[in-house]
Length: 416
Image 1 (cartoon, rainbow, N blue to C red):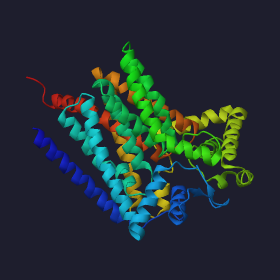
Image 2: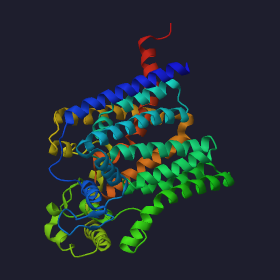
Image 3: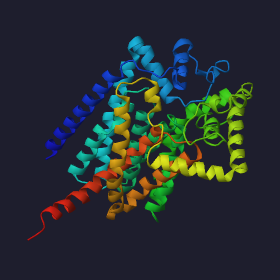
Image 4: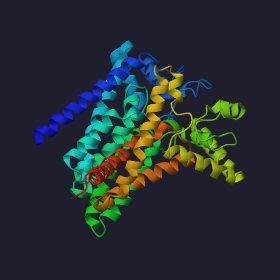
């Protein structure tokens, strides 16, 4: 039986690699007409060995913390190693990461009490899920975020179910890497010990050891970046300086719930910040966003509701970056994103509400989903921001199908 499971997993991984290989061919050299922030930083790392950014070419290129380091460092590595073939190397690394995500989904289903068939079904869905395919061959942080988040959450559950300090250490390190890929995942680091506190009620000794192991692992991973931020800006900072700008993009009189390029929102306001330090600019835009909320609370709550709707369903401009890059079959990709997600939701709801004995573990996944929805409501909605936790929905879909299919079979073939 074990050998048969391994065979199925291998076949699923071959399918995943094949689909992403086809996507690589279709994407080709397509690229948006500008360098993305982490690409500019990567270029500076390759050319002069410095972690620099110029705020969209509006300021001089200066030492920066605008974007956390994991993805710029990966890009710089691929460009140093592969030169003109760096995109192929990057895509290959991301496809490898996508294969690991598939295996982690299998493992997570098993840890949640699922059987081999349910684990294989989750792996299959991970292999064919359109966003997972698309982002694996794109210059995007999404695949790495997904890898670190799914591994971290799987290890968080394993740590308390198996009483494993090694799983707690892996959880802390993985979620710290997620934070150093996109800053909003910092929210998971305090949430996990909080959930453990409830899950391990009255087992205070093990809770303390597990939380300490996780926290120390996270600190070890975050420390080099915190030190860099301190020597660069003179402040202790665990993430990056793009939060204020993103907060203002989502909270201003011209906001629509999605990303809008800053100078298209208010060019004069953006240009008024060009003489500020990076930390001052970050704080300035946070103040601007909060001022909008205080001045127009009704507008803020309407925007927040719209962002939540986009988070639960999909945003109107889904796939806009893909379209800007000139990808082939753009309309088909966009349709695949939308139909797949909408088709998953009913089965995910069924799997969630028929969780039964899994509710204690589900509570962590639900908590993560709620927190990410709240962050979206505070900032702005983007498909790639939700994608790393789409794997949780895939898991609920698997358990939902396991409830629905026997029910459907009984309806077709009632007992005599």
